Length: 188
Image 1 (tube, rainbow, N blue to C red):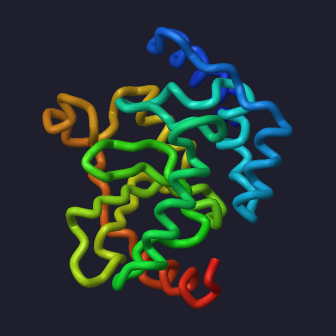
Image 2 (cartoon, rainbow, N blue to C red):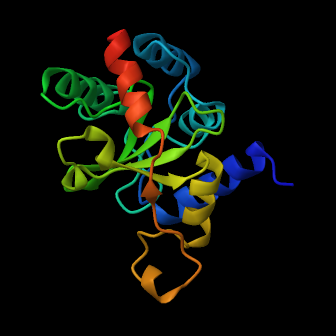
């Protein structure tokens, strides 16, 4: 069985091989500060990626957003989406779901920090109707599985994905409505 440390090591190797310049890692203090600002801890694997690989700049296609820093970060995007969701007529962004990668066209890969496995979700606002839950899809059962698809080139987002019958497409996230409701009821 592969360990989390092995996965982080393989991600770091691919990040170095596929990125021209990686930003420095986020320090333990920066990760702790981000967690304090969020009000919940990052999944251990996600925290390790930021502390041991780089503060963003690696991963599928558009690459992970930085956790902290100037400009667009995981923290700033989370705050922005939560605020827009709370102010709009249709709540759509659940508490504890961190946008980690911007796919473009307002779509995000996001990690559910309240999930034991750190599920990776796809936020696709173009699918949203008058129910914010319709914009959410389960991309991978865990952050580990999502990273493995990147490492092996078997993600739905790969250019030739339609040529491989074993590539899993995101499916509607069944917990979306309940999780959005939890966040609006608590106001977090």
